[in-house]
Structures are given as structure tokens and as C-alpha cells.
Length: 63
Length: 219
Image (cartoon, rainbow over all chains, first blue to last red; front, side, top):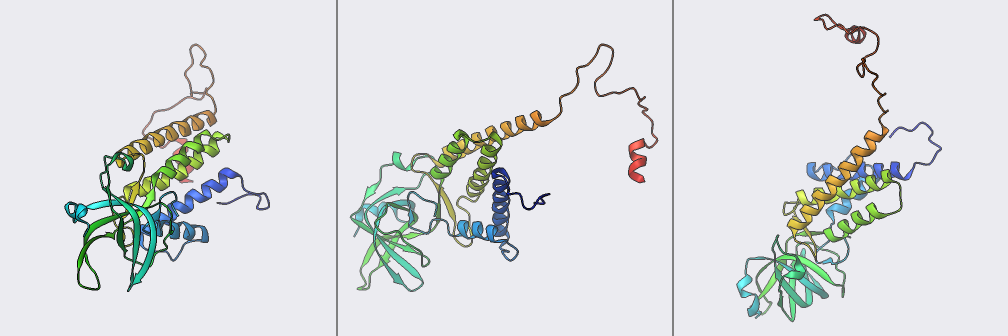
């Protein structure tokens, strides 16, 4: 995301958009199996979804 | 021998209970679930609606070295089958086959995102992120996910109901996003009698020749 003023903190909506974009890229990486070009945030989502509820998973969490 | 599980041999089941012990067996991990309830897997029924079969304890074999939350209410999707003890005797146990995604949590996060006192744009973006996640999981439901299938589950809703709710949320989010977009578009001016909207005083030529825009694009 290109920003005009890099010193200005991003808004909550911008941060959510960054997260949504990272999720999409992480899902695409899971499907393609290519995780080499992921950013740190995308990799965090990639690992999260690959390690979904290690069985037996805790009933109340998606950890 | 757990005779009560004999009819479920080979079937897909949910096992609910609290892990009280675990031991490593080669590349696998065997987890003991105390006071286990075995519920046959059904896409059209919620777990709470199904009558489970009670067992004093049940051994579950997980196909990898996984973390186990001891003494916590846990759930696992597995297949019922026979296993052999070290002394050669047979018994019925379960083999864990899937990763699990708790849809209850995502639906509750969606509900709270829509009700929080935040801007509509933020609520919609937050909801879109959660919908993206749950929609992907539902599309991958039962399919291989890095060598291990993923299953969405809910304690209170059937898989069919989860899909319906997600569709409903998706429609609401799309509708609200469309409204926000329409509100951001400049309003059209009021038409005066005898004039048409969007036409200014310049004449419009309908000719097979390149328009001024085409000429501009061609440089």
C-alpha cells in the first residue's frame, strides 16, 4: 500500500485492509504450496491456518 | 473392549472430552481422553443435538507430534477403528484425521464486529476479513489441507446452518459496502425540463469515426 505521508500512522481501516490482504496471500500460498515470497504477516497467517487446532484441539479456541 | 463403539467402526465421529494423558509412539502421538463422548459426524446436526456414546476413556492416535491442552474440554474429528495393544489384544480406539476450525468463534466475532461502536467502514472491513477466513475454511471443508483435511465445526449449529449464516452475513456486508460506495459517488444534478441528464451543451456525434476520446488515447 503506497502512502503519501509515511510518518503518519495508518488508520484502523488501513491496518484491517493490510491484514485482509495478508490473509488472502496466505490462503493462496497454502493452495499453491509456495511459501517463499511471503512477508512476516502473511507467514504468520500461513502458519496459523496450517496449524489449525492441532488434534485434539481445544474446544473453545482456533489456536 | 469398548463394545458400544463396535457399530461405529470405520465411521467419522467427533470425540469430546478432556485429555488426561499422552504418549509418543514413533512419529505419532497417542492421547487418552477421559469420559469421552463419541458423536457420529453429521453435517446436518449440531453436536449438542446429537446423542453421544459415552466411554470411560478412549485412546486417540494423532498423526503428528501435536500440542495437547491437558485437562481442557477438547474436540477431535476421528475415525473409529481397532488397534492392537502391546500384549497383542485388540480394542477399539480412534484415529485423528483432521484439523479443526471453530466456526462458533468466527460467527461470534462477526456478530460483535457488526455491533461494535466503530465506524461502518471499519466494521465492514473487519467483517470482510473474518468472512474471508471462514469462507475459505468452508470451501476447504473436508478437503486436504497440507496433507491433513480441515473441518469446520460448531457446538450449536450444523455445518449447513453455518454455511447459511455465512452467506447471510456476506449478503449484508456486500449490501452495506454497496451503500457506502453509492453514498461516496457525487450526486447527479436535478434534471431541468427539456434537458437530459449527463448531456452538456456540446453536440454528441454518433459516427463511425474515432471519437475525441479515442483520438486522445491514440496520442
